[in-house]
Amino acid sequence: MLQSVRELVLPAAQARLLLLINHVISREPAALRRLKAHAGRRLAVAMVDQPRWLPALPPMRVTVTPAGLFDGDDEPGEAEPDLPLRLPMPAPPQLLAVLSGGPLPEVHIDGAAAVAADMHWLADNLRWDIEADLAQAVGPTPARLAMSAGRAARDALRRSFAPGPDRSAR
Image (tube, rainbow, N blue to C red):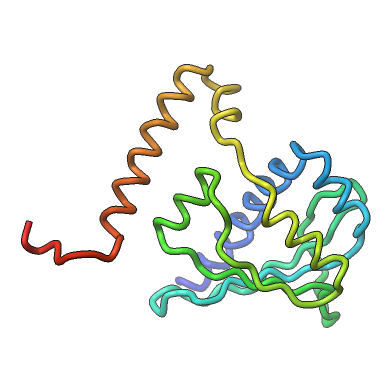
C-alpha cells in the first residue's frame, strides 16, 4: 500500500517542484541565458544524507529545454545523465532558511564542466522572492505581514534546533 501511495505522490511532488524551480528561473534573465546554452542536456538530481526513517527517494531526472527551463525526463532509459547532482537533505531549520532566501546546502555536481559551472552559478545566485509572489496574490501589506510571521517562526525553529546548553533545565 505504501509503495502505491509513493508511486502516486512522488511524480506529482516532483512535477510541482519543477514548476517552482522554473518559476524562480524564469524571473532571472541571466539564468535563462545560461540554461539555454545547455538545451537537451539531461540531469539526475539525487537527495543524499536522508534520515534512515525516510524511504529512499529515487533521483529526479530532468532535461534542459530550449527555453532555458527544466522539464521532467519522461524517457530516462539506460543513458547516463550529462550531469548528476547530489543535494544533501536539509534539516528543518536549513529548509526554512532556504525558503526564506538563504543559501542552498552544498550541492555536489559531477559531469560536464560547462554544465556544472552553470548549475553552480544557479545554486549560488537564484533566490525565490516569496514576498513578491505573495504580494501579487494578496497585496503588499498582507504579504509583508505573512513574511514577518514566517521569519519569526523560522527563528523560533532555529532556536529550538540549535545546539546549546541543556534545555531541560527550563
